[in-house]
Amino acid sequence: MKDSILVQTLMAFTPNEMQELGGFLACPMFNGGSHANQNLALFTLLAVKIRENKCVEIDKSQVSEAVFDGIQKKDKTRYLENRMSELMSAIRKYIAWQEINQAWGGTFEGLAVARFYRDRDLGHRQEQVVSKTKNALEECHPMPPNDIFLLRFWLEEETLSFESFRNQRKGDLNISASIESLTNYYSTKLLTIAMAMLQQERVVPEYQSDWKLLVVKMRSIFKEYGYFGNSALILLDRALTLMEEESDEPFEQLQEFLHLLEFSQEKIPYKISKNLAAYARNYCITMSSRGYKPFHAARIILYKAHLEKGWLYENGKLMPSTFMNMVNTGLLHGELDWVHDLLETQQGKINGDDKDRVIAYCYARYYFQCGQFDQTSKYLNTLLQSKKFGDASLERLVRILELKTLYEGNEELIETQLHNYLMFIRRTNNTLDEEKRQMNMNFIKIIRQIKSLRDKTSFKQLNSEQLKTAAEKLIKTIENPHFLISERQWLLEKLKSL
Image (cartoon, rainbow, N blue to C red; front, side):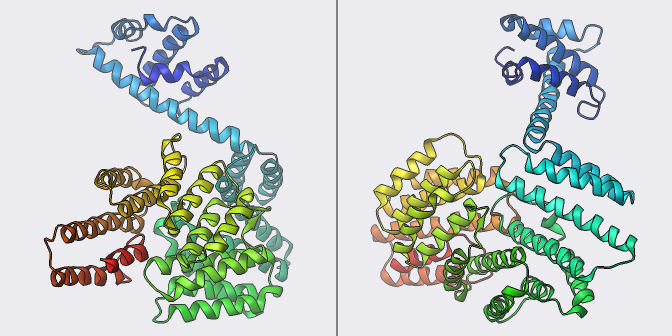
């Protein structure tokens, strides 16, 4: 029992953490159910053994008798294992709570209290709590950029709520201030929806199922306020049109939107311009992944322009996903010199704990595009041999690049790594929406078919006419914009090179 994950986890806690965990387990909110008392008794016994450094003496049969004395069970060992499993689940909750409490501190608690007051129409109390929470956010420990993004997003929602309440109470709509608050709020929401759709960073579950309803609601509000002819509301409505309506000419719609954004830039707040620019880039990425060719060139133009305007920075720093998207977009368009300059001049401005891995991946991606596969493998080996990835999105990109490198090297190891990648996709199903999951599954399927064609050709099992027919059939499948697949452009290149 001393080698169990439960005991090893408990031994890793400090004495203060053990004391805090005891209080946590005594709370029915975190350790409820019919076995709560037995779980707490098991923890108390193990805590004593660990404190007295007597872990060697921890034996399942002795623990069962000590903790569950008087409980009539045929198989007390099995009963103990079930209690150990439940206790471990409660400990995981504690670890998650501990991280939130340490990283987010009073910010998260303040937001929860503010929502409580809002739901009960206590606007004055809500305003007081939001004011304190803003200060708490500034005093938070360093945290991942996405956590800051989500907290600020929720905080803006609460701020808008009590400001609207306050204006109504005064009988003064304060039109200009209300509209700016409204557009700030909804431009942030629009960007959040786009990020959730693309699965670039953290998945925001509330936008996975009902974003279309939210879009309809947003547009109805814009129409209500549209009588004031506000430029920001007009732009937001155009952006929502891109998302909501299926057009035969989506690229023309985007160009119209970008032209309006450029024309209205000086009339709308800087933050809203940044959010709408980010949405335009994300929209290009989405349409490119669906095979709409006109959007390929638009992406690099937008990245260059927005980098120059400073729209890509947050407090002087670049988000990892933004940097990787710039690198990948530049390489896809043959902008090797521009990407190399980007790697040399911007790498020090990347934010987040994974910045070293992001830089290593981007250099690997750069050397892959240059055809220097030995250098690519060097960076990939460093990445894959390091400790476990904290970001599943980055790990997915690294694994895809590894598969592409193995294919170029014609290595037999590719089949093993394809299987490993398939297992990885299945393990991360809960962080991928159905569209993204299908894109990756189709990538695995198609690369296997291309490899099979290449192998049969090298062994002369196919004549040129058979190869041409099979390749054309695959090309037609991949070029279909409604066929969801990752690395569409690279796969087409490999097919056509056969």
